[in-house]
Length: 123
Length: 182
Image (cartoon, rainbow over the protein chains, first blue to last red):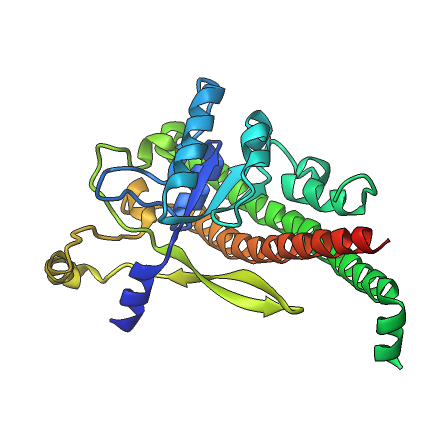
């Protein structure tokens, strides 16, 4: 019971990604539909517009029951300005590879920001 | 000796701190990249098993149409994270740990449902495998286990990112102080 109680207190992982990423991570057990019938995932396909992804990302950032946002790196590329402007530590944004798009460290926002540390012009 | 140096030459102490912070940041960056490549392996393995399941069950039976939508019954996540604050190298850092909430056994589900309703939340949680049918192929179970590992690894990578970000902020503030001194 104590275990269930602590689980209820935990925060969610949200997923924004292609079909396989969403199906996979939801199989892994991160999916939830809350009492207001809001899901914590967005399946991005070729019909999904950039503004839809942007809106969804902003909605997830605002939700206080989400602590981590998992986003495919190729989808993150489409809304890079939103991700770069999100500087709050929580919710944390994790760019993940997908089966069609291997991980590219040079595009990762967090690593690009960290690389700036070694740039003499940036403080 | 150290105190005398820091009093006379406070800049050198700051420089040393910058060096050690920079070195730690490089180590963390390397770890983030390595772990993400490991995550990629888990995701790839999971995707291959999803593809094999599609071959057995049919293209449309392992797709987003099986996922719950806004019209389906609300349910709880089986995997969540809990946040705490810890000190890494004297810097406050958020640390996430994953919580696994196993689905209740079937015969108890009704009673559990009643109990949960008393708490003001009637949402149930069940194994996501059931969305895809009762008798699912072994490959779908293998895909599930790969993605469970991917979820756990993701939480670990987020922790590394949190350390890196806290370190970066500390680095910038030390660097600013240095610039004021010189």
